[in-house]
Length: 280
Image (tube, rainbow, N blue to C red; front, top):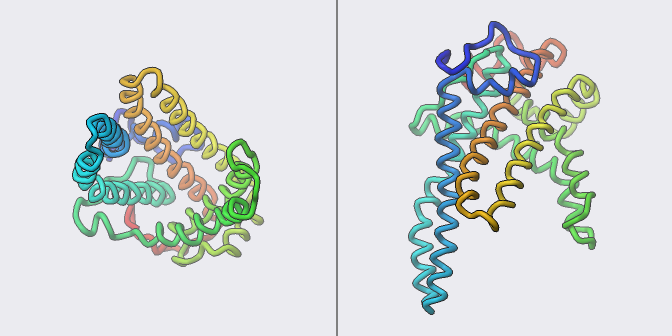
């Protein structure tokens, strides 16, 4: 798709600034940011705020059961649609990672809005959820359940999470880009980190910067709520757009790392299992 605000590059970039502008190189990437941000804004900000107002009014009138009924009825669309929206976003993020790893400079097209578009190609995400995310968070989970110290204000959980991020990121890349669909096992991921950890450091720092940008955006938005409610409502839409932008750019950075180091990583043969172009 070469119909964005910026033209696609002649070859994959190496700098973070060009990667940050990546969504502007395709109309469908920009559409995904706008549509997904609006959807998540509606279901995670507007609807919960409506629930809080209904609950407060129902309590003031002495009818909490009626307020709960209104909340349950108004929450049904979100319970049905929000998982599908999240799945659709994950499908697109996977396509960004794969297309970038194959050397494409323009964002991929969005998945088809049918059963195949929503559910075909989710297996790498399930593999990463078990082998990457769950295993990566295991040290943090052990600390939380075994420690008698307060979690809030304790820097140990933050350190464990930062320590686990390289493992989770490499596992994510291997889940999508390796010939073997279950290659992201703990020995495989740790082996990659030990052999190729040095070249991965710049990529990791870029992803950390994106995570910090997203976290700062969320923190500033939440801080405004108490003093300027309607400003918070408007800022929340921009916050969601920034978070989704950071997700797309993050997948772009991970895909670029593989593209520039594929000869040393050697995760695939001449015809990788993840197919042609953006297909998973």
